[in-house]
Length: 537
Image (cartoon, rainbow, N blue to C red; front, side, top):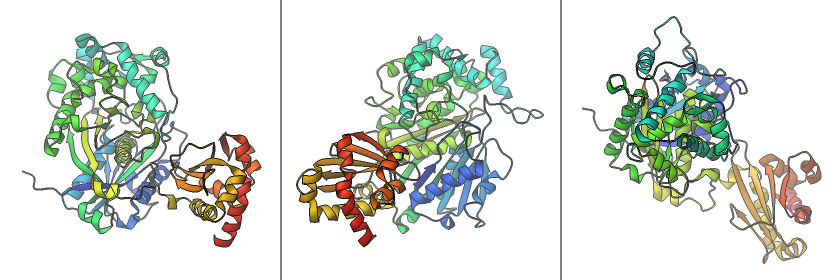
């Protein structure tokens, strides 16, 4: 019987943009980017990390060490983890266990993958394939086709569901449609294109009932999370952003995977069901308490059968669940707001940690256009054939501390002061207090400055030079007359006078939407900013 475990928290997350294989940096650079973002998010230094769990599938031994030595060489234990498509969440699970079991106070979980183009294959043909029993069982149930093996596993499960419950081709396509459209709002997604149902249904057939746009792509990418104890949270005053891992369970195949003649059971239905029941029971929660879910949609068919394994709907009821829209915004749950594997991409070692990152952003209210209203309890599901599944529950660790943070905190997860141009807007606010009425007469407009940081996160300032003496609001809600979009450094240069506005516009550094004449009036108060900048910056 296991002893009592400590409460565990995620205090920092980070990830790269997922991209087509061959278009990214090598794995050490991707890993270092994700780790540095997670450290920045947590406001911690690498020397505070006591141990690291690093997941990847396609790589030589000790890639974990190679990936982290570029961040720091502090002599810590580094564990290399490989658990097929659930590798990232397996690294996270180990990190969580280390902290919960009082073996460490602060552990890094990192996952990355540098993949080859095309379908997955075996890297060691001279050794027993770990999926040989699964393939044998698949052939006995469904035969073997001239199609990628992974697509056969999950496509066959979809065909079985159609035969047993009357599920339609459109139900699988609707899942892919949802995920592509969700992913269009995620700057980290490999695919950010809105699709139509017709496009998805008519895309290249892979293996019935799956078409190409219902299959996740191979991808390059990395993601990281920093896992700590409650004592560590309080020592470093991290309560406002700490997300508690309320529960996390890992399961592997049960005899039913092979003994029952079922394509659905073969892809891990029972291990998902058992892990979910266990994590909910231990946490004292019901699936009905969950608002947002990131699940393993390697293929649309897997997302569909997973609805039932998780208990989101009754067995055989996934089609009705989809038709009601209970898997997206406005429905009972929002499933894969990140775009899931189908849109965001699937670098095997990174996927589970990218799911963790998305759910942390959702619970912290930092998911920007993807934000699920009222997200309080989040569920993660990451599955690998062979097999292993990790199911986790997350909630804000200290809701009162999160709620008491400044109302100017942004949905991007970055405060005002983390942007280089922030002092300029503070000086502008002072200028408006001193000369606001004069500038309002000259300008008579409301500006929105959308600013993108180095990591791609976006915030905005509303500059009201139309009402009263004018005012500046970080993340203000007022509707602007004109919107100007720039990255952080370029806007700093523009407002301080080192970058010409017309030149910036023609170079594509400045994007303008709305009243162009009002945009030209920017110079009316820009001069005042430059005077204040020269005096105070």
